Image (tube, rainbow, N blue to C red; front, side, top):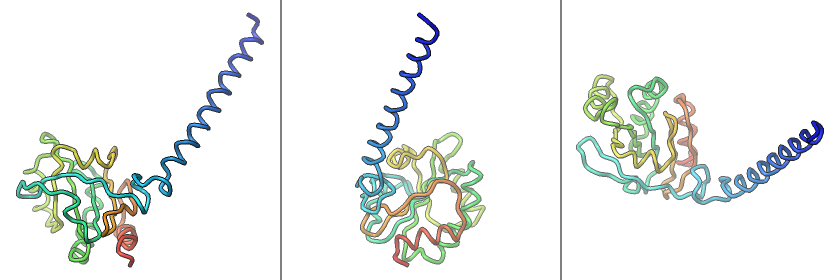
Length: 184
């Protein structure tokens, strides 16, 4: 086979792959955009995925138990520097709005690097007042596809997801997201 024929075949295959990628992207982005997918975590009409975690006393609680008030779910761990950097903001806002907004500070508790006891000690040592929940089975993390922490999900009182944020955030940013679920 001539060199020029090989280049033509390679170029045709490359063009076909690129066309397939563009078509696939367009199809998936239309199908999974926040506006069109009621299961998307970013859409205002998305129903929140329920999950079960443990409270400080080892009692199982579900996310849906908190519907009726706006809910902030924060996924974090004590070994995560960015997580620890935003915890003071969460504690401050919880201290102010904890009666109006439910805060679920969901610790990704693997039982080795992160144990319930070590987390309780950390919370006590730091003087945080927000409620901590333990995701020992990772049902919450799986429900929201957590692949990086910190990650926060903002849920309206009716149980629909308003927004999600990956990465540490300032107190101002946290308040802005909360305004989106409280109408403030």
